Image (cartoon, rainbow, N blue to C red):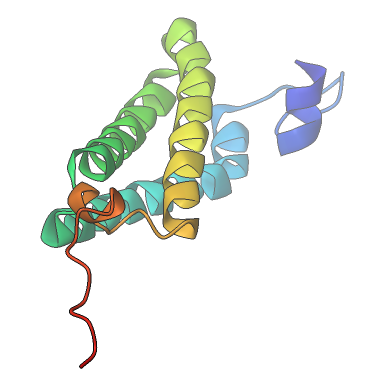
Length: 129
């Protein structure tokens, strides 16, 4: 708990009391980043659905959008349900792992290419005369 206090600097010293407003003020940047990531994952999902590259890319992007949506719910209920707060952290690691998977596919040039073209099933160019 001390590390959380130091990270967000939301908790006062030993003699002072803490208010809900104090904690809320310190978590605005954290919540803002989460909202940005949820919007970005939704935009990525829309782009992937337009490109329609194949099941793996679409499924991973859909899962990423769903996890970021659930992340907001878990973060919001963490005050009243500590177990939800624990799942908030676990879900964050799942989001990170899925983001890394999609990033690696994009880095290799495999994110927006249909699976049929990845396997080399495209016909070779005709020979030059």
